[in-house]
Length: 111
Length: 114
Image (cartoon, rainbow over all chains, first blue to last red; front, side):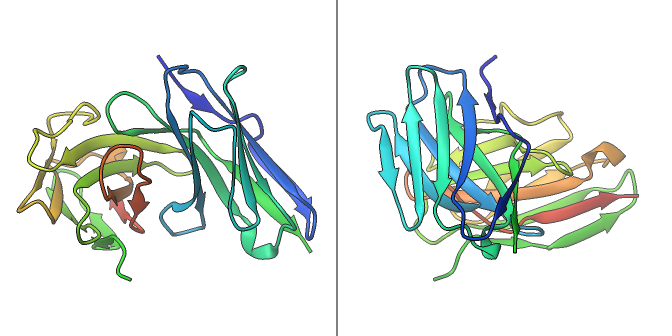
C-alpha cells in the first residue's frame, strides 16, 4: 500500500544552525502535505502545509520543499532553537480526507 | 482561541471494561478525525466524520471500537471489552473543511489497560 516515511529517525543540531528534516512519500497522486511538531505529552501541532501544485512554501523560520519528481518532502528550520526540540511528522493526504503519517523524526538541539 | 479539547486526559481501566473518550472540536469545524498513537510511533487513522455524511470507519481495528458525533460537534469514541493492546494515546483532530485544510489536534487521551 501507499506509505509515507522518513529518512532519519533522529537529528541532532547545534543551536543556531539550520535543520533539515526529510520525508519520502510513495503515493504519486497525493495532493496535499503537512508537517507537524509534537512535543512530549502534547498533540501534534500544525507547522506548515503545501499543495502539490507548489514546490516551496515559507513560514516563520520554516520552509517546506516538495520535489514531486522523486516524491520527496523536506522541512527546513532556520536558526534552530532549543524550543524546536520535538518529534516532527510529515503527513500525506491519501484516499478520502484522512492523513497518512510517517513514523517521525526526533530533533534534538544542542546548546 | 479555543482549540480541540479532549477528555479525560488520562484513563486507567481494567481489561474487559468499556471506555468512552470525548472530543470537542474547534467551533465551526465540520470535519472530525480520530487517530491512535502507540508509544514512539506515528499516528494511525481510526475514523473520520464530515458533516452529515456517513463516517469513514475504515481505520477501526475491530468491532469493539465505535464512534459517534452528535449534532455535528462533540464526538465520543467507545472501546468495548478493552484489551491490553488498546493501550495508546487517542488523538482527535478537526478541520474547517475537509478539502486540503490542516487538521488541528487536541492533546489526546492516554489510555492504559491493566
